[in-house]
Amino acid sequence: MNYDYDLLIVGGGLVGGSLALALKDAPLRVGVVEALTPEERRRSPAGHRALALSRGTAQVLDGLGVWREVAPEAMAIRHIHVSDRGHFGKTRLHAADQGVDALGYVAVARVLEDAIERGLERLPIDRLCPARIIGLKAGAEGVCVTLKRDGECLGLNAKLVVAADGGNSSVRNLLGIEQEVRDYGQTAIVTEVRTEKDTRFTAYERFTASGPLAFLPLGRKQCSVVWTLKDADAEEVLALSEAEFTARLQAVFGYWLGRIEPAAVRQGFPLKLVRAEKMVDERVILIGNAMHQIHPVAGQGFNLGLRDAALLADRLWAQTGFGEDIGEAGFLARYAEARRRDLANVIRFTDSLVRIFSNGFPPLALARNLALLALDRLPPAKRLLARHAMGYGVRL
Ligand SMILES: Cc1cc2nc3c(=O)[nH]c(=O)nc-3n(C[C@H](O)[C@H](O)[C@H](O)COP(=O)(O)OP(=O)(O)OC[C@H]3O[C@@H](n4cnc5c(N)ncnc54)[C@H](O)[C@@H]3O)c2cc1C
Image 1 (cartoon, rainbow, N blue to C red):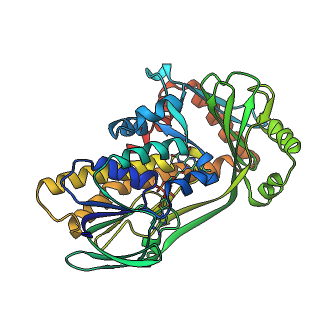
Image 2: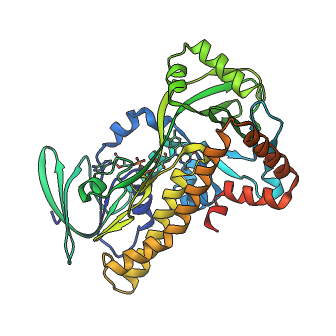
Image 3: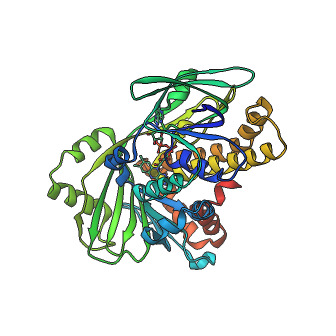
């Protein structure tokens, strides 16, 4: 077997898998290294999390041939309802006002992972799975990579390595790339509920003193819940009995959807903003969660990671079209520069949402309620917020 690649993607998850699909038919020898077998991945409870997907993301997934498999199981978001618990301000966004049929979609991560997996199975690429990267040495001509597979070490060469191996990226660790970490001291509790009333394609974002609470429509009477709480409160809420938990959630969310009933187990995800200190190193590019982990309050993590993959695929197509080396420093620097602004905008937007809306200080609570009221009455401001929700605003 020949282990010389043009491009080696480490991590065949949502973002790495999407990059491989985007390079279908590219004149590149591509290898994908993935630590988990598809069966192991399907067994992971993290696959239950619901992802809010922007319209821009759905369009990219459509181009990858993935969306047609996800769409029948995804729920359109036609309305977004934003409110502040215990205060008067609220705002509503409607797809029809923006001239579109959906502001975004909700899909269960596992449905998307499975569709990407089926797409990868159809590609003529080498899939090294299950295998883990344990060594990496970059030089002027290429990168030497060592993998551990079936208890044995395997040596590979590549012109470019793309790290798409998630928040605990081995590639990033092997290169000693530091991370900037902002711990929000919050945990997202993720679960599902059945609702008495029809969700009517509405996503609810409710800001509370301890953090934001999102109800995302998964079905006519089913919602995915992402409830962000301070770490100590989350610990207590995770330990509640089912009846106590439901009562607490109902009290915080209110009766917008009538009575709610639990429909899945609760899982806690500690929340941090993590950003690698550099996006590129010699012949290595970091994308997706390997590069950035965002607070799920604005549902941006995968949307952002997919834009990394989409832009990188475009650039790789062009670079190979010109017959140029895909690992050369100038190419990597131009890619990093092109992604810098989008990443900074999303981090700023998400971070300010967390800071402003989880603050119980009365003047700030008043200011944000006035802002929500004003927003509800100002069509241009609402259009801007809607563009953000649809995944267009963040590209400005
Ligand atoms: C509670 C919660 C809610 C969220 N909600 C949203 C949302 O509404 N919208 C949104 O856009 N995003 C959301 N996100 C974020 C989204 O889930 C992530 O941004 C996305 O999963 C990142 O994909 P990735 O491919 O970069 O990383 P991952 O999904 O972590 O994939 C990494 C892959 O690399 C593999 N791997 C790891 N180590 C190695 C190794 N050493 N060698 C080889 N392979 C390896 C792993 O097995 C995995 O397959 C949410 C996240 C959480 C926690």
